[in-house]
Length: 464
Image 1 (cartoon, rainbow, N blue to C red):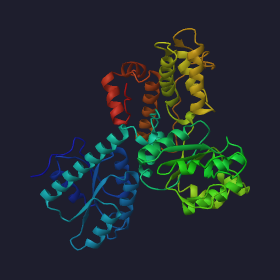
Image 2 (image 1 turned 135 degrees about the vertical axis):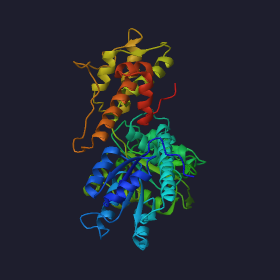
Image 3 (image 1 turned 180 degrees about the vertical axis):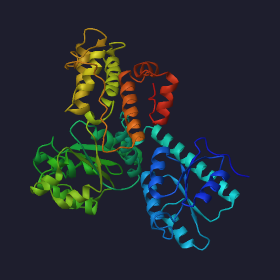
Image 4 (image 1 turned 30 degrees about the horizontal axis):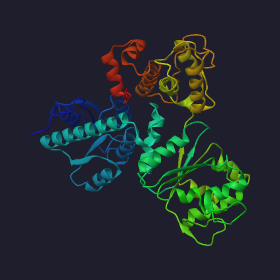
């Protein structure tokens, strides 16, 4: 007995033999069949209908006796949608090409002419597998990654970074976080430490904030009597982080002599305190961060290339706040609640002019600048409704709708529409502080419609 077809049961049949094409469509009438007879028409149909399952013959025009066109189509379909389930129909004695197709990513293969019941069962199972994978991906998207370390975001790129940090966390790889000042590099480093579940502490040191003559002793520690004032043996930050994570912030400002000593530690995982003779083994995960362009510093001779490659086993580029869709307003609401509670100001809210000003501002200081602006506004605002002036911003003229830039190099209308919908929903949710009813009104849709949109676009509703 064949399995019931999935709710979205669009099936693309690619077959150049029109008689066989019609026969397949007739025998598979429980599915929503779309047909194509060559590679070009198959790609057009695939882009238009985005079927989860495709059946295809490898021998396609203009040379049906060759499999080159079929394999080219298979590669293009998988490039467009890696999760598509392609069932290859081959000749009775063509098992070699069938196995090659599966190796390239095809879901299954059947010999022509296929048994109707076996074909229906294979297609139904392919739909079920696609449905399960789509649901798993949606649930993964809806979950706030632990690797974000509590950072509030709905931006797709930041959520992707959070999941990347989670994947990296169990390994011993050294991680380099790159991004402008104030983008949240230390928060991500703490998220990496939490996701790794190491037994030791998270220890941070800012390489730019400590004078060069003190930085070595801060990092490596010193023995009693090593220098004037060294009245007792003191472990350094590296040793203190044993079993945990060492976060080296602003690694680009590390003095050149210390770069060689840090490189030696990374290679041997042993240190010597200043004035000491004994090597001390240290088990520590090293995470570093900088807003500087280290490759430029390498070219100028200010940063060791060998140290860079030791530190940059995994590189994470953190986008600035101005490029995170809807996050500025979302964070402003969260900061406002926190500081209003800390300062016993009761319930405070952002005025419409404040929201528009936050959306329009470029935030060169990123999250740190936004946090300072909101904290100042909570202290200085005359009422419980914060305006743009309280934030030190100027409300822009016009509607202030969030920009929704569309990359016109991508002419896939479905993708363009989905991108525009995502940016509009994220902006509306940020403006209304996650209030579904108000966001639906702002978007001009019903609440169930907005929930459907959020579900389809994998946009999570933040916990109250």
